[in-house]
Structures are given as C-alpha cells and as structure tokens.
Amino acid sequence: MKRFLTLIACLIVAAASGTVSAEVIAFDDAWAALGQGGNPNDFYPEPTFTGNFYGLCGGLGNGDLGNWDLEGTNGSAFLGWNVTVDGGLLMPSDANQLSFDISRSAGSSPGQTFTIEYFDDGTLMASNTVTLGDINVWTTIAYSGVFDEVQWLGSSDGFSPYGIDNLQYTLGGVPTESTSWGSVKDLFR
Ligand SMILES: [Ca+2]
Ligand SMILES: [Ca+2]
Image (cartoon, rainbow, N blue to C red; front, side, top):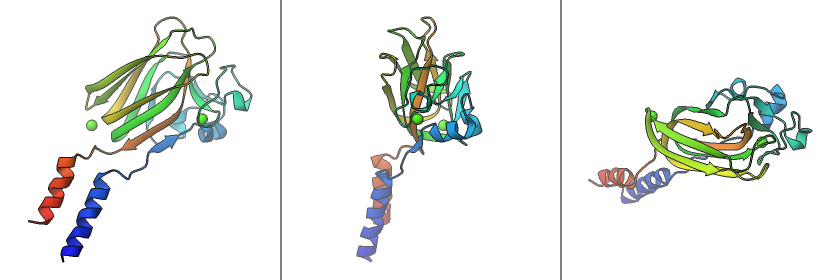
C-alpha cells in the first residue's frame, strides 16, 4: 500500500511539474494551403488572430511575394501586418505560456516599437514594449503567466509593417507548488 501511495504521489508531482508540450504555429502549412494573403483563422482552429492583418506571406524562401524582405524563423512563411498594425490573439481557454518571433519588414523605419499586453478575464496582467531590430532581424517575445487574450500595438511612428512567426503557446492554468503538495499530503492523511 505504501508503495502504491508513493507511486501516486510521484505521478502527481510529475503532472504538476508541467509535462504539457506547447502548441506551435509556423504559418508554412497554412500558407501552403491558402496561399499569399490567406487568413490564418481559416486554417488554425485556435487561437483567433484579431485585428486587420494582411495575411499569410511566403517569405524570402518562397520568392518573397509582396516584397516583405522577411524570412520566417520556423520555415519561411509568416503572418504579415501592414494594413493596420494593432492586433492580438483570443485564446480558446486560459493559457500559461506564449512566445513568438517578430521582425519589422520592408517599408518600416529603424527604432520602431512593438507593445504587447496580456489579459485574463479582461484584467491587464502584464505588458511589454520592445524596440525592433533591423529588417529581417527577429526579436523573440515571451511570456509566462495566465492569460486568455493578447492585444498588441505596432509603432505609431509612421508606416510600421512587420511579420510574426513561430508562435508557441500552452493552454491550462499554472500549477502552484502549494496546490501540488497539498494534493500529495491529502493522500497520506
Ligand atoms: Ca514560418
Ligand atoms: Ca481567464
């Protein structure tokens, strides 16, 4: 019986330590299916991309359709923004991790910025503003914490088109040590 309880406790600790792997959106599969300017929301069931984006772009590795001067970081295709530069993500449920790569594209200017805000149940949880590098020099945006919506703001400093690629996220709440050890203690009562 003691061995059984020890096994159960180990399983609970393993589950609480987070073995869930991230979902990865590379945009290349969507671009191959929908072509230049396609809407990622017509391909990926989640998350929902919000705002007035241009759409899927093949990138330098696929002939640089549209002359963005960008090659994605996880396969050449990426999601391009040049109509308006504010957008975001709606998650299907609470998520606890997000990362993606961003680069400004042809027609943008040095020093332009990108601001991202993370919300849970409508409450701002965190925000981050970065100054983007040169064209086709990608910056990784990363966040850990509970959120269900993301809003971002492109630079207000003139025309500021950009691409994003290699979007990764993990759904689920964040397990805490007190929660997991509480469950283990309950078993031994
Ligand atoms: Ca890609
Ligand atoms: Ca929520």
